[in-house]
Each structure stands twice: as structure tokens, then as C-alpha cells.
Amino acid sequence: MVEHVDAVVVGAGLGGLAAGVALAGEGRSTVVLEQHSIAGGYATGFQRGPYRFDAALHALNGLAPGGGVEEVYRALDIWDRLRLQRLDPLYVLRGGGREVVAHADIFRYENELIRNFPGRAQQIRALVDENYAVSGAHDYFAAVKRSAGKVSLYAIAVDTWPEALEGRSERFRKCRTGKATFSFPAMDDELAAELEAFLAALYRPYREHHAHRSGT
Ligand SMILES: Cc1cc2nc3c(=O)[nH]c(=O)nc-3n(C[C@H](O)[C@H](O)[C@H](O)COP(=O)(O)OP(=O)(O)OC[C@H]3O[C@@H](n4cnc5c(N)ncnc54)[C@H](O)[C@@H]3O)c2cc1C
Image (cartoon, rainbow, N blue to C red; front, side):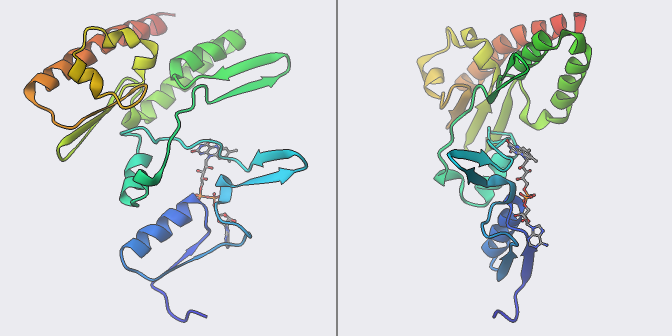
């Protein structure tokens, strides 16, 4: 039985585990107490007959550069050990004679919801706008994050308007690390100018899309 510890964390969900790892990483002796037989909290699952259920969480949010969680995982020194898979669509809901596809692109998802529930269009748009406003850190249009000697760009709008990549230099396109992510190891003036032009090209359809949305 441990008699003295610097910190006791109650609950081994993602929050408690992250707190425990952070405290231990600071050199503090830490105990994480969990009432359940397994750790993970909402990030666990269970089996009933042939079916496997998620307790709650089915995908991790906020992992894109600038999304907030990435920063936490880097601080916990686990980021490089993860193999991430972007989910698009996030899920498909079937029931009541409907099929609703939850697209990763928030505005495609919005259109999908409005198509299914046209009488609720106003409320759906209001909800998306509010979500958009509070999630400014991982902006739909482009999240740019700078660290020493590196700039990461997450531009989910590339999914909707891939033509914005046309005409970009080989060097620029080589910086693409995923469908909508880029990493620029050395940001010289030439590359910075190209990044600016790319964002401008991406912003044009994005702005028009918004103008159209607010006019409807
Ligand atoms: C239906 C649903 C779907 C979700 N889907 C997603 C998703 O797709 N993506 C996403 O990123 N997030 C999702 N979330 C949110 C995400 O699951 C939570 O934000 C996250 O898992 C919360 O972690 P936590 O550590 O704060 O709490 P929890 O996961 O609730 O962990 C708390 C832990 O504390 C333990 N505990 C409680 N009291 C005591 C006690 N007195 N003594 C000992 N142990 C105790 C519990 O047993 C549990 O293990 C979803 C949430 C819900 C409810």
C-alpha cells in the first residue's frame, strides 16, 4: 500500500489518464483510481453477443493541427506514437426511413441535415453558425499553426475545393501530408508567398459559399 503520493487522480477516463501522465511526467508520484475494471471511461467499449458497442466516444475530435487536442497529445509525448485515420463521413445514421450522412465537412453536413429536415433549416444553420463561432481554434477554412522552424496548415476546405491546389508548385504540393493537411518545414519568402496565394484562392469560394448561405 502506497502511503504517500504527490497526487491522486479520481477516474481513469481520458481526462484522468491525461492528468495522471502529465503529473507523472513532471516527476510527481501519482495514483489514478478507477472504480471500473477497465480504464478509459467513455472511451471504452463492450460486447453483447456478436455485437461490439462503443460506450460513447467513437472517434477523437480536435486532432487536426490547431484543433487543440493535438497540442495536448504532443505535450504528453504520445503524438508520434499514434496512427491517425481521418473519418469522412464521421458516421451514417439510418432510421425512420432516412439515411443521414455526417460529412466531415461541416457545410456538407449542414446541407445534408437541411435536405433531410427542410422545415428546420433555420435552426440547423443557427446551430452550425454557433458551432463554427465557438470552434474558432480549428477553423473550418484554415488553421495555421507555427512552431520553431515549422508551419502546419489544416485546410479542410481543400476537400470541397481541391482545385485551389491547381497551379501550385511541385515544392508546395510536396508539403501536403494528408488530404487537407500540409507541413512546411522551412518557410522562406517564396513559399510564404505561395501559401498566401493558395489561401486566397481557397478563401474565394469559401466566402462566396458563406455569402450564399447568409442570403438564403
Ligand atoms: C454519447 C457520447 C458520445 C461521444 N462521442 C464522442 C466522440 O465521438 N468523440 C469525442 O472526441 N468525444 C466524444 N464524446 C465525449 C467524450 O467521450 C468525453 O469528452 C471524454 O471521454 C470524457 O472523458 P473524461 O475523462 O472527462 O470522463 P469519463 O470518460 O466519464 O471518465 C470518468 C472516469 O471516472 C471514473 N469514476 C467516476 N467516479 C469515480 C469514483 N468516485 N471513483 C473512481 N472512479 C470514478 C469512471 O468510471 C470513468 O472511468 C462523447 C460523449 C458521449 C456521452
